[in-house]
Amino acid sequence: MNLPGFDPQILEKRFPYFEPELRQAIGREGIITELEEGDEMMHEGQYIKTFPLLLEGIVRVYRIDDEGRELLLYYLNPGEVCAMALTCCMNHIKSNIRAVADSKVTQIRIPVQFLDLWMVQFKTWKEFIMYAFRKRFDELLETIDSIAFKNMDERLIKFFADRHRSTGNTVYTGTHQEIADLLNTSREVVSRLLKKLELDRKIMISRNKIDFKSLVS
Image (cartoon, rainbow, N blue to C red; front, side, top):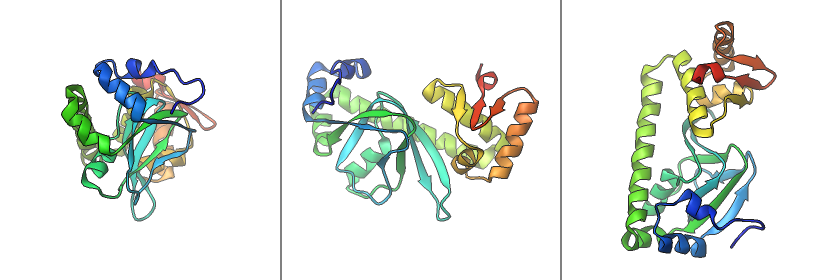
């Protein structure tokens, strides 16, 4: 099922290492949909019946604690699959994470029955899934290390570095409260640390925008 104006060659662009037969199977069995910025890709308590392969855009994957605060886990980039969604599919359990589009997103959703079937049929699919688990595991360890061992100013700098690594952007658009929610701290702490970074000429702050090019250059 193709969206109007959808270029089927994007599967080859995003997954050039897949066997042609696998890309054909993805195009045949997958359902292509779009999300606008802020739209939810998945939420807690949801059974995952189709898992997403990201073709365009950026998705933020996070958890929410009992007090409603967000804990950022990782970003999902084009050409990637959400390992958390795969885990839920494999074990037939409800999702315990939330994923939200950070930009306009194009995704192709694969019915869950093909996850195991393609692991047997296609060598590159198995390698892709195993790599996805390893990459996310490493990112989760990095998140845990950041929370356990880094000061909040270090975590804030890491937040901007991760944004740049995932999106290529050097300008963050959003409020201080939104950053605080993602770092599981208070707006006052974030605003104080941002002001210090600005005084040190490492960032430039304007209304709902933060230019952090000097931090990542």
